[in-house]
Length: 223
Image 1 (cartoon, rainbow, N blue to C red):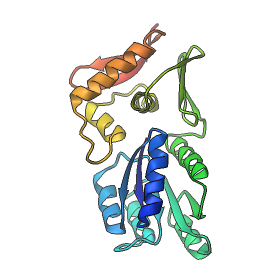
Image 2 (image 1 turned 90 degrees about the horizontal axis):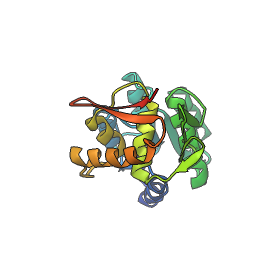
Image 3 (image 1 turned 180 degrees about the horizontal axis):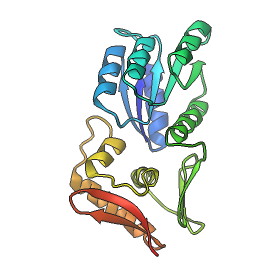
């Protein structure tokens, strides 16, 4: 899961970063609306935008309006002051998917982010299935034929991306974009290592990760 946080309160942003990263997400942060707008124009691999409305340089509503004007359907969770009902209404009218009033529970925010991601990939079902392989997006637990698979946070993220794109090729560059934060140096060789580790853990069952040389990877069921 790849998340962008646009929040000018550094203390709050640090709390969001720690919480979301601890759940295995790749999270990037910008402190003003201009940087948020630029990031959203150049990177289309985010799964969710957490957007404070009271941003400097360009307010959150303008960031949201510009995002929707470009035709983006990126799920957006807006953060507002507890008494700013008018801003909440405007945010929803301009295309936000959900909102939370400050102060809020980080646990609840995590749950709402997961719900928005599920909605963004086409449904509200928490568990993705591919034959006997199942992945619970809410609990971040993978099982094969009912038995839990021990996976690292990076392996879980990799599996999630492949499952969300079952039947489609996913390139190394796409995996880097979805799994890695700005400034995080991850080479194509590192992606190959993660794929190798994930293969060893899931290919004990009737599922395999197929490699199409030069193009990418996809999940397949073994007949």
